[in-house]
Figure 1: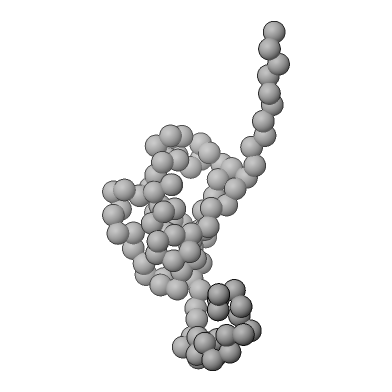
Figure 2: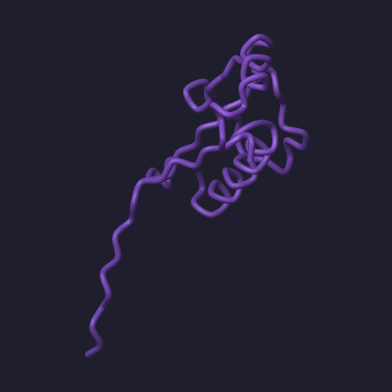
Length: 98
């Protein structure tokens, strides 16, 4: 009799940044919902969308899954002064400067 390989499942958070990240996560969400019936059928997967536009809407809702819940969205605010300060002092942000 052949040995059965045991595999474990790891809880995963998918993070999408900006509008493109939200679009991609929405399509992944649809695929999970189509495959497992609902997100409840696949509880080890969760979603987080981070964006500066809190009113962003998915461009093609038919291609996406169910809407993101409030706890799955994070609105990040960046002021014009913060951007100006960063641009004028780029040596402090080498990962951006590259």
